[in-house]
Image (tube, rainbow, N blue to C red; front, side, top):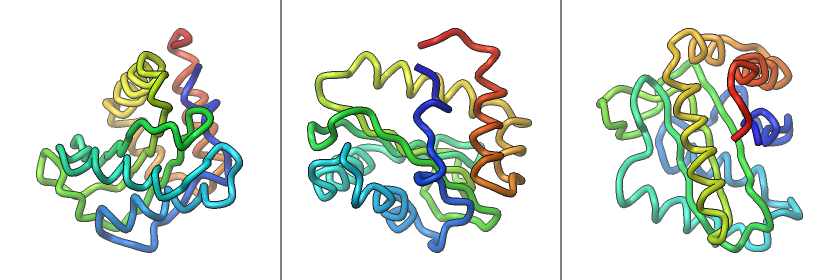
Length: 156
């Protein structure tokens, strides 16, 4: 499975309303409020925020990947958001975040979850890729940027 296959325009934000970690995470989770892949949105929220308490998912280079596992979802779900303003995310490198990729998997799909996290991390290690995402103008463009970049990788 490729990352861009998880993305849908309904689950992409081209600008966050908030500028702090918890509110940004909640903006992404709330995109799934009425989605049939989510049985309990509050359990999803708890899984993500509890994971965040262990260690910040602001991994550096202006990127964060809040993630968690819960059987409150029927399948892997993902959401992506970007902004040009600084998000105070308590990132590991101490710098603000501009790109946030939310990933939630089921408790029984650990291997798939880890492979997707790894793929997202590899993509986000590329300066040019991150810059293209920050400067993108539409949800469609964001999906295309992921798709173009992933054409260089094999399936997970």
